[in-house]
Image (cartoon, rainbow, N blue to C red; front, top):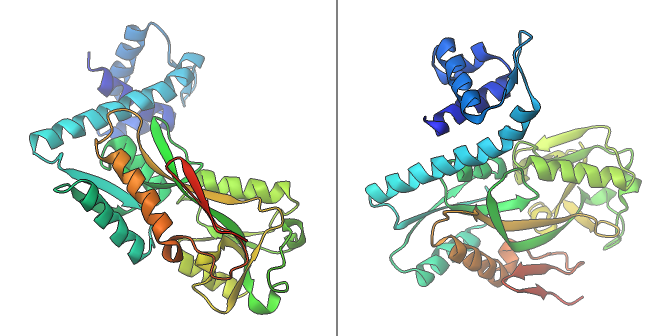
Length: 322
C-alpha cells in the first residue's frame, strides 16, 4: 500500500469537502480517488468521511488524522527531496530564506558568516514571506529561514535571533510630543495599517488581538504588502501604522512613538525542520543571531534614540542602556 499517496489524496478531500472537486485538483478520476480513500479506511480500520450528504464531512477519526497526515506527508516530501539532492550531489548547498526587504548589510553578513563557518558550503539565499517559508519547509524545498513568530506550521524547530518593539507610526504633525508613549486605547477611532495577513497570518491575528485587549478595535484594517506601501498609506493619512522604529525611520516625515506598556514585541526565529534538518541549518541560526547583533543600525537600531533595544542570541541577550 502506498500510504503516502493515499494520505495526500485524503488531505485534499478533507480540504475540499467534495470527492469530485478533489479529483479535479489531483488530476485523477473520481472513482480512483474514492477507491484510494476506501483502501486507507480499510487499512486504518476507521471511517474517515461522513458520505451521507452531497458534500462529505470528516468523522472524529478523520479530524484526528488530518494533523498527523500533514506531518507524515511533509516528512515524506522532505525525505524524497533529500534523496534527490543526494543523488544529484546537491547536499553541499544550504537553501535559506530571509524576509523581503532585509537590509543589504545583513545579507552580506549572513553570507560572509556562513562562508567563514563552513568554507565550501554554497548558501542559496532567497526572499520569502512567512507563509511561503512555512510551506517551503514542509515541502522540503528550503532548508532554513527567518520567520516571525507566532506562525502556523508543525514539525518545525525555531531558535530566537531577534526581538523588536513595535510602536505607533504617524505623520509628524499628528504625533505626541517627542518620546511620549501612545496608549492603544487612545487610537480607538483611528484606522490601522498593518503588514498583510497573507505574509504572516498568525502574527497578523496576534497584533489585532493585542489591540482589542488594550481597547482599540480599528474600524478598518488596511493591509500593506511591504514596508514602503505601509509607510505611504500612513503618510497619506489613511491610518496609524504599527511597526518597528527602524522601519519608520525610512520616511523622515513620519514619527515613531512607543506603545504604552510595550505590548507588542515581534520575535524573529531561524526555523528548520525538527527532523532530518540540513546539517548546516543550526549554524545558520548562530550566524544570523551574531550578524543581527553586529549590525544593529541595519537590522534593529532605534534611530530615534527613545527606547532600548534587545537582541536575543545563543544563550544571552544584548540590551542597549537607557
